[in-house]
Image (cartoon, rainbow, N blue to C red; front, side, top):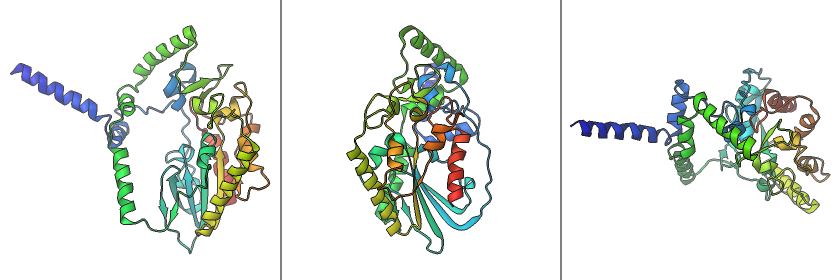
Length: 328
């Protein structure tokens, strides 16, 4: 009898532990109840590396409660993690309405013709060459079919209820106690073997940490990869075709934002920057208007990125928001 109780107890306990890595909703509920820590509270790069010198809490930006001065304007934002929910909110903008879509999805939007419809396409620099290898036309204007709605629901269900070992590890081992153990191991590897996690690159002066995808010496995502004038011309043409597509499909204004790689701004000791953003934004053939973030970032003496993260901090984010609101 006792052995049976032990077996069933063990089954229940281990089933519960397994379930923690199965659903984003469960992990979100545990976080909201204060039962687990935010796994990204010190930044995504610290999360990869566990190097103690980059263990700095990410800034919590105050809610701006921006006054709506353009009630007849609807702002549509297609973006990646720099402008995801939690970083960017409707309350940041002066527009009367706000809709945000992830740049990797295939969303639908039904435009209100009585409003001024403005579209911003935001992409981080490291993925610009991939995303504009052809015109970016992921956003469909109009109503989705029943089959398209079902496909979207199935994809969402798979995303929300799918076992993820990384999520599982985050729920179980995100406390400061376990992070201290991970830091000890990371520091030992760094000092004795000059080895860090493969997802990160540390600057030569050890003051900054970067995402390996854009800090590597070469490759399509690299800050330092050489880009021919021919490829720049093709990228510009695809941006122009993207602009024409959305203008013809009902948007009154369409803008591009290229969020600079952290390594493009702070990784000067890692290699020679290819100046991708400037070569696109300053190209004489470019017809799509842009929000230039690279110039204020590259000339600022302030830190505009979170210490242990790939993303901009509150000040860096506000530079972009101010540029958008000024144009709106």
